[in-house]
Image 1: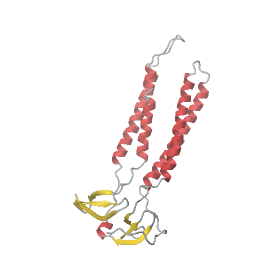
Image 2 (image 1 turned 90 degrees about the vertical axis):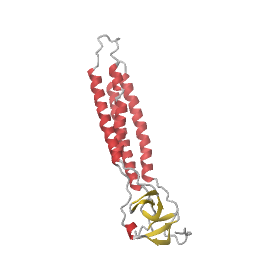
Image 3 (image 1 turned 30 degrees about the vertical axis):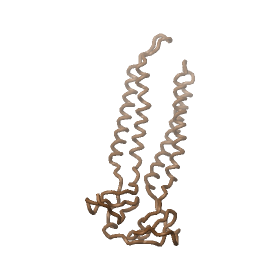
Length: 234
């Protein structure tokens, strides 16, 4: 195929969008996590009010630090979410599937569709779309969620079971519960990251050469939206 010049741009046709659906879903999940972070910060603020009269005030200080971290995390996610929702991937000049007639290739000049078209083979039109596999992502996400929650729950139980009450106000309790409780934060962070993997989708395959579904000895070009007529030897 020759590469045509830009003539008679078709502004009435929808512009090609690559990887739109996964990014939208990822943006919504980030906004959901932002709301969760702000809600968690609110709970920590409530905890500060309840511990303000404690003798050392250490619990109130811990709640304040956690609330600040949760607020900063929520602000960051509140910025990243809309970016994922609104960001577009620019498609360069290429032959792409006609948005009106899947049996044709239409030249996209990088800004507009042109009137230049070429027919597609019926065999290529009938090929199933190339879809990214989410199986490994989901298995990893499930493992992180389960493992993080188990570690967090076990740490909480061990810490409460090993608390040594101090009979003397100046006597320090055993440091073991404090050390064990430090595992809760990274464990919950791992569980949240695993939940993010479970709720989001991997990006659709980018334009590249892939094994030809019609001939295992060839490669066929996937343009990011559909299979094309271009083939090459493996």
